[in-house]
Image 1 (spheres, rainbow, N blue to C red):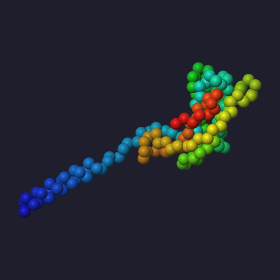
Image 2 (cartoon, rainbow, N blue to C red; image 1 turned 30 degrees about the horizontal axis):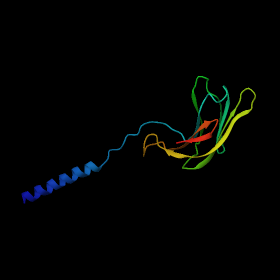
Image 3 (cartoon, helix red, strand yellow; image 1 turned 180 degrees about the horizontal axis):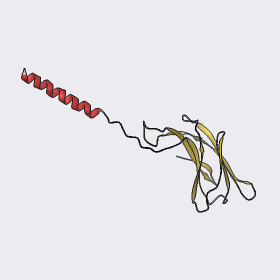
Image 4 (cartoon, helix red, strand yellow; image 1 turned 30 degrees about the vertical axis):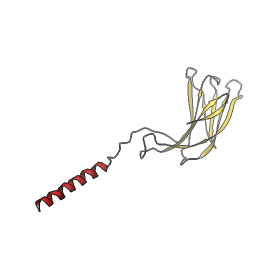
Length: 144
């Protein structure tokens, strides 16, 4: 009887140790922020200093003035606060010369918003993003 009780106790302890090993501790999420957006990156050199930029993702547009001349590369973003899921959209990027007001660059491309979780799976935020690179010769090239 005592041997049987000891055997049941050993089995119960072994089962609880095995089950405890299968339970994962909750993972701590980091605090990186992110927004749903489409961004364009380019080397400053091809565009005029002080140029005006306009980036549109479908019907949502953002305008701004160019980077300082000392910046070798620049990124411009259009926020998409209503983005909720993978979707294709048209991106258009225009550069206007500040001297004569002429459009020196005007290109469009199709992109797909992709899910991004910068703090890892099961951690907020979940955002939807796409990026393109503006190249004077090849146009807008999707960045993966």
